[in-house]
Image 1 (cartoon, rainbow, N blue to C red):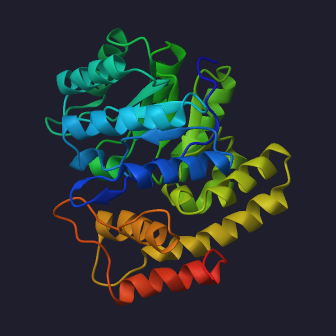
Image 2: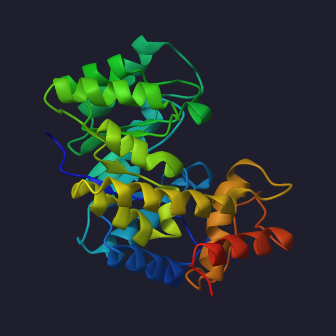
Length: 305
């Protein structure tokens, strides 16, 4: 097994104020999650606004995260970009800053190719880094599904150390877990599916990367600890509660990133973690009845009095 990262590894949500990184809120947020017992952090993922961040902003977020974490837990850093050469540039920038355990990359997503090109992409990335390399399977954003066969070839050959599966394809994930175990577990497999983490654990996942853990890290930590004890009733009951909490994203008149991450930020603002629910341009923060909806859900699961 090439990676030791397992457990709850949330994609870090990013606080903004007046268009700038809100460092005091970020520090409060990271320390809150580490104190909840998280096993790692994924910086510059989808929840972490990687698609909205300039190279300068990515570097600033990594530097601050490395400083705040101070070696307490592992850090994965997203190097997500359109094509191979750009991803390699991002990898070099991550290595120059330092402090990362591994980098996380998707398939290319502009000049789309087939599985041959995607496989070569990951092999070229591995040739250009000594850090752990994680594959991020998120076809809704990159329009390419990373097949279990492809991932197993890369894992057996030591090209990738782990997979963050946000495909929503529970059948393919189950097959991947079975194949990974049969091959001696060459990769760590983490699910990014907030609402059915219990099912992924039953399939053999090594942990989770839930954006919702920004809001309720304790709940996902309790679930993981119950899984390690094989206390399946607690795993299920925690998931039921977290599924209810995920209803914060069911806002009106807002879709996609604005609804999902917008709800996470609204919740963190209501909980006093973020000073502002500000979103990256051109996305608007939730307001009015939608904020009240988020507050109502938080009250319903006992997070807000």
